[in-house]
Length: 453
Image (tube, rainbow, N blue to C red; front, top):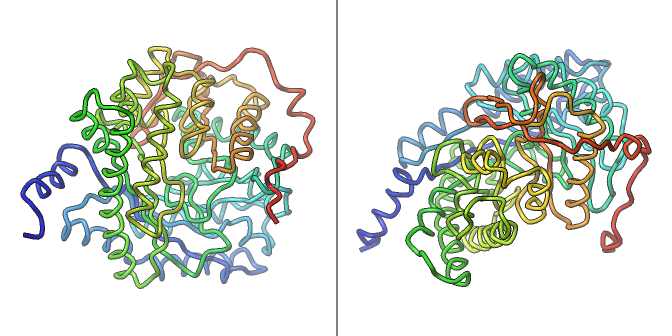
């Protein structure tokens, strides 16, 4: 017998009871051959390229869902950073690029497109400045386009001029979508050490080092990990670490199957498998609840960072055992609005911005889907970004900030974003300012361990 009845039932339970899914199949597409001195011509090429390469993405995902019975939540594309593609054009405002992409992917039924992006970890090109200036308008006029800006890296340090600028851009983006609680900021990520092959939005882009096209997969299964821990009450950390690793292995194998098959049908190489425990607002599909299952009364209490470190590491180890193509971010996401357990912990007061920052030193990304008061200054937002970039730079890991200053709302109010983005309590920030710190500008140099030549 190839599979035992127990193994078959276990697999069914993963999907039916514990919300295991393929969070995203993301088709990376190079736009380097779409460069043109004419912005209009460049956008025509971009449209044609997306239609040509991604035309069958949605139908392929649906076919695999039907044949294998595996839910695929989102079909997405990631594109070459538009700051690179548009820099040769005669355009000053890059918003039309975002509109072209938005219209094209909408016609194809694709859920999101990443790549309205700039890489400015060391300094700006003229194209980078134009793209960043275009972000508020571009995100307010589109529904499916996502934006990211990489402002720091372990090799280059932190571009504090970019950090200061992004605080202002985030404020403008929130104001441009004030009627929807600043939802434009939910499509904007500021990175340190951004990976070129990440399938998760809003930070996905198809890096310059990638090929013509590839298929990346993001798998998610916090409910499966939580269910496994529920049946092993009172066991030691050694035992539950091994349990998490084995469970992550099983989840990864499923993602590998879907990714390889989708890539084959689309006629592109299989890129990477990102095994990130990405929660949803549904009860039980929560990273915070996994931490609580380890014995914490509430996520955020003392011991949370240690529990999250164990979880993240075992997920990575299990994934690497199951696939030679693990990449992207891979670990555990802790977005506030997208995790019912995190929302509950914020309401209880055990999760604060400072505690979240400590947790990001050991998890996949960083301060994610955090709502703060609408009157939070641009300098304060920049300072929050700077802290998170420093954690990534010094620890040689990817960190990110997706923060939403909700217009017209104060700490304790509720911000609603809808769908997978969920909603969250508005979290307090420190009253004392960081304005003089941000005004210094310049660059925080790379750490000593960045010299590896």
